[in-house]
Length: 376
Image 1 (cartoon, helix red, strand yellow):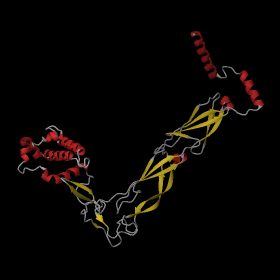
Image 2 (cartoon, one colour; image 1 turned 45 degrees about the vertical axis):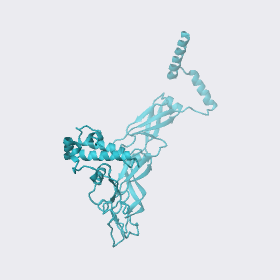
Image 3 (cartoon, one colour; image 1 turned 120 degrees about the vertical axis):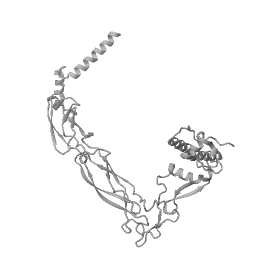
Image 4 (spheres, helix red, strand yellow; image 1 turned 90 degrees about the vertical axis):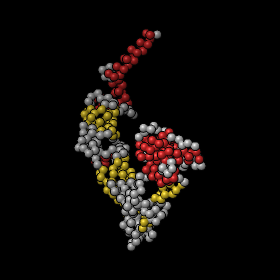
């Protein structure tokens, strides 16, 4: 049976670039890989075809010969057939789907394993976010074993190169016409074996301890701010570099202030007479001091007063946001007889000038209803 055209197998034009060939092969190889279709002979055959086509077309000299002479260029010992497919596929899958280490030397002792990063959640108050602080935290983590200084081996002994993988940390197994690379089962991918492990850490080179750390929280931090402490994460395996510790800040709700970026908002209730006659009120600020706000005569609920520079600190800046005071006119409750009498007298003497917003609103209502009656 005549062979199919290699370009047709890969689904590319004869003018396809090396990158286009590689992309087409990778896509099709993933689709018909035997591991995805166990026992499917058709998929296995198609996979072989793809490998053979790509082996020829990805080689400049072989591709030139194929373009001139077709499949005859590789007959009678011309090369490029399934006979050398196992080594070829090993290289192809390592470059496409491997773990990026390649085949260049031991993975274990020469490629120290970095420790894991850690996360610590820290809740602070709004006042602490405003002023900044130095916080002390206790973090359970893995640290370098003091007995073996991180080597994992008992004093007087040392690790040896893994005989199974030759120190590479990976082993290859032939499966039919291609080979598969896996983590070495003997050394767990480290490339070395410890025959006499340390009693303190049982060969890992690290132990679990609770560490006390000091964290500088700058003024102006916001909810969700992340602080990185380099090298304060878990210790690496067998002397590897430590990971980092990430502290995530959350800010507790405040009883008086609400925050919006660098600005603060505070709702302050005032009495009916203060709103009507005007006056001054004292309000708190986040730094613990008090500020005076002048209330003009006839102030309504919702009126907002701005105190410049009395808001939150701005991170890594000398600037500050503003504090906004919003007044809430409080209606009196549980009136005495005399108070009721005075309010009724006030109501009788009230006019549109006394309540301009009410007069304006009900005037518009009257016009609206009158318009509906005329339309009817």
